[in-house]
Image (cartoon, rainbow, N blue to C red; front, side, top):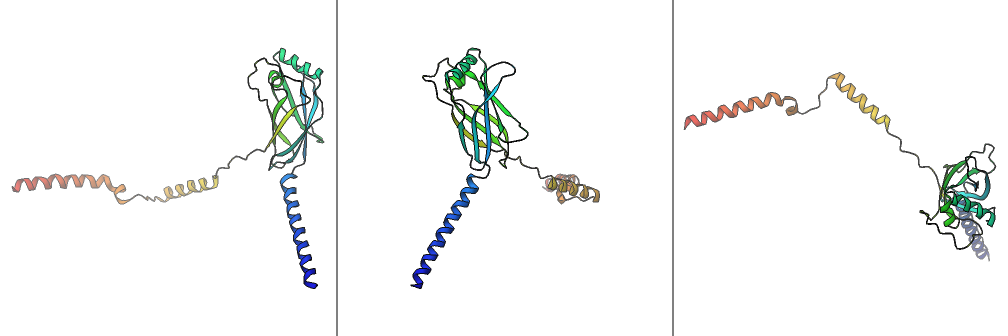
Amino acid sequence: MTAAILTRITALALLLLAWGGTHAFQEDDFLDGQLTLVVEDALDGGPEPVFSPRSTVQVRSVKSGSAVISHTRPWTSELNAKLKSLVDNDDLYRIRVYQKGSEDRRYVSTFTRACQMYESGLTETLSLVVDSGGTSVVGVGIFPPVAVCGGEAPATLPAHHNTTVIIRSPIPAPVPDTATYIEKLEAMKNEKAEGKDNRSFLAKYWIYIVPVVLIMVLFGGGQEGGGR
């Protein structure tokens, strides 16, 4: 009876440890950032376009690039007509992104040709650059699948944007090893100051050795010839 109880307790403890390890992994892998970003776009041209919210991106992990996007605005025929007007004027489709809840609202923005968005049927890839700590967005890019406009309208009116989100973080540049370089310079300076010469014997005195060898060869060859 006692052995059976101990076996059950051990099994229960192993299950708890396994669940805790999995839970900790999920927390570390997917929930390290919890950064929420708001995406706004402008559907009117001109030097000062008016932006309005269209989507929200929740960055769950910078390491794994996990993010969830939700579109807060349905795509209506009125919005489609505005986008078509941008297309007719060969204008740009602009977006900007900021961190939700931030006291200092700093935007990062980008644009693409309106005809690319229109002919793509609002299908797009958003590339968001987030700092390594997952605390702020530092860059954004938008890439519709239609790279060259052909003047073809989409077959149907989309209900909302079809967005793929890519999360990236800046890669730190390699730091030069200045300490080692300075040490080498100091060593070279010290050697010059002490007058040290690490060259081989031949490298140092070849200018004296070569003439002597030439004289020996020339005079030695002449004596052998005279003896015959």
